[in-house]
Length: 334
Image 1 (cartoon, one colour):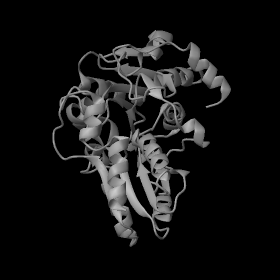
Image 2 (image 1 turned 90 degrees about the vertical axis):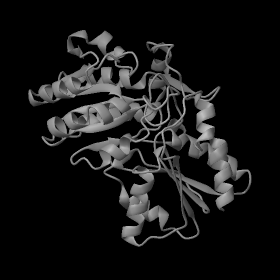
Image 3 (image 1 turned 90 degrees about the horizontal axis):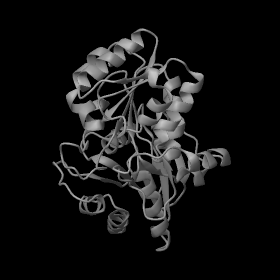
C-alpha cells in the first residue's frame, strides 16, 4: 500500500461499530477495505454491480451502495435468490459481486452456486464475511467448513486473503479473472500487516514472506499474520521460521509449496482458520504425498466439531489458533 492509499484510509467512511475487529491492540488497520476497493473498481468498470442478502453493512458493501445506489441490489434474507440473481446478471454482461455470511453461502445456497453459477462458469464473485472462527456467535454463524464444502466444486476459484492490503489487491484481480470466485472476507477495521513485506497479491500464487531454516509455516487468511507473529516469537528462542502465505486455496500454487517444503531440515506446519478436515492442510498434505515430498508435517486448524460461542480471544486460544498456542505447539514439535 503506497502513501496515497494510506492517506486515503484516514478519510474513508467508517464501517459499523457493531462489527468487531480481529486486530490486536495497537495494530494498524484499514476500514472496510472490500467496500472501498469495490467502489474504486466500479469507477472504471461500469459493469460492476453489488448484491447482498440483507447484510450490506456487515460485509462492507454499504460503502459501494452509498456511492453507486443505482448499481446496488438488496435481495433480502434470501441467499438462494441472491445467487440466482447474480447468475442472471452475469448472463446479461454484468460483473456481480454478491455478499453474505460464509455459512449462508456454503450451506444454504450451495446448490444454487453449483448449478446456476459454477456449472455455467459464470463471472460471479462471491465475497463472504465471518469465515472460519471470526465470530463468537456460535455454530450458526461460524463457517468452519466453507473451504471443505467449496473445494470440490469445479470451476470455482477460492481466495482467503490475510489483511486489508490483500483484500484491496484481490478485488481487482478476481474481477479480471473470468469465472466464479469465492472469497473469504475480512470486514470492518481489518488489520494491515503485509505492507511491511513488499507484498503483491497474485491470483493463484503463494508468497514467501520470510525465510527460515527450521520451520516452514504454510498459512492463509488471518493465520498468516498469526504465523508471522509466531515466527518473531520463535526467533527469540533461536528458532528460525519461514512463512509462506497461500491466499489462493484453489487453484493451489503447488509448485511453490513443493519447492519450499522440499528444502531439507524444515518441519512443515500448515496453519488455517478452518476445520482440519478438507481445508488448506489436507490440500497441502495431498500435494506433498503425490509428489513424494515427505517432510515432518504438522497441522494447526480448528477441530472437527461444532465450536462454542464466546469472546474471540478466548475461543482462538481454546481451539489452538492464537499466537500463544501456535508458538507452544511448534516448540513441542521441534
